[in-house]
Amino acid sequence: MLRRYYERVMNLLSSILLGILQGLTEFLPVSSSGHLVLAQYFFGLKASNDIVLEVFLHLGTLVAVLIYYRKTLWELTRSLFVFKGTVENSANRHNRTLVLYLVLATLATGLVYYLFGDLFESFFAKPLLVALMLAVTGFIVFASDFMKSNSIPASEMGVVRSVIIGIIQGIAIIPGISRSGSTIAGALFTGVKRQDAAKFSFLLSIPAIIAANLANLKELTQLTGSKLVNYTSGAIAACLVAYLVISFLMRLIQTARLKYFAYYCWLVALFSVVYILSDKV
Image 1: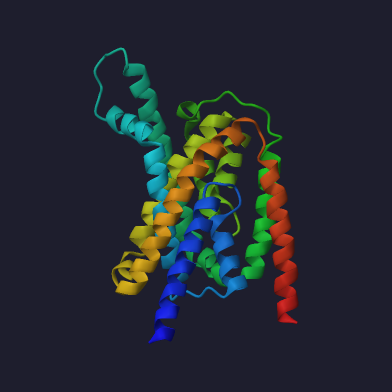
Image 2 (image 1 turned 90 degrees about the vertical axis):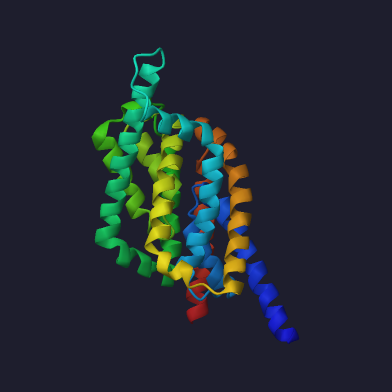
């Protein structure tokens, strides 16, 4: 009985630790999914369904972004139902356009997932590949700091830019590729100004996370009580930490100081590759 109690406590602590890790890495450009895969490999943190655990942790970060952008989300929603010729008509029109671009980007992400989702998700079982993808993230993030300051607001990015960003988000399903880092870099590369690039990336994560949960609805409803408690605890930890991280990242993006995360990604990738290869010898 003591052994069973010990195992339950350790599983709970493992979920909370992974939740903290998720909250720290979801919005920082260092790939939360990559860190979860590597953490489970290094520390032997086994879950009965890794995809379901990640979905729960993403739910926590989803709540964080909903709270952080609650005013923006309200304005976007309100603009869909206000068409009167008021002083705010221009702002509402810009908000409706932004919603359109978010929808187009989400559809592009969905298409990539439909075509390559099974392949990308198979990479979760390949920690060496994940480590290499983390190194790729480092190059993406490093390059983003050297992109010139742009002036195109998100509400004027156009169809082509929104689709490109959506495709990039779809590719970022690959563990080790940072969703936030790659979509922000993609937006900057296409000319979107820095603050709007980050805002669009965070807003774009909302439908993606919701879709991931819908895709795994059957598995979520079949969780046992103990696993549900563990996963929920991890989600709460992810939410609390992620909320604190978002505002910090916004300041770094505006001052073009993301390259420090590139150094971190390269360091983790190098360590991981050496460790994994030596572990297989």
